[in-house]
Length: 94
Image 1 (cartoon, rainbow, N blue to C red):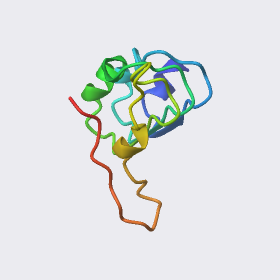
Image 2: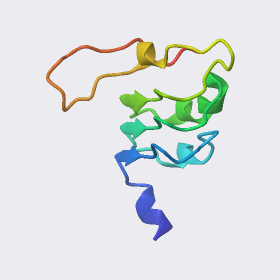
Image 3: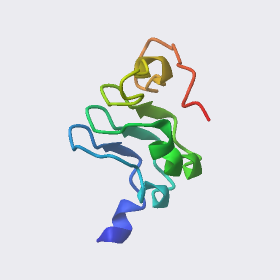
């Protein structure tokens, strides 16, 4: 049954108190990922996502990125292909 997860294209992991994305790199077909409302504290915790070549939509809003000097994560949102806005964010910085 774990093999079926490899074919997942959209995944909502919001509100799970996640601190890292480790392990998600195996989901090579993932194109939309919602990580909002978790406990991610840095962009380096998102490092495994660099291996997801199909990823087009990423939501990291409402996390703890930046600690005492929080980063406005809404600046890095990518629009959903299902939305009508056509507006695209800048993506996750390297």
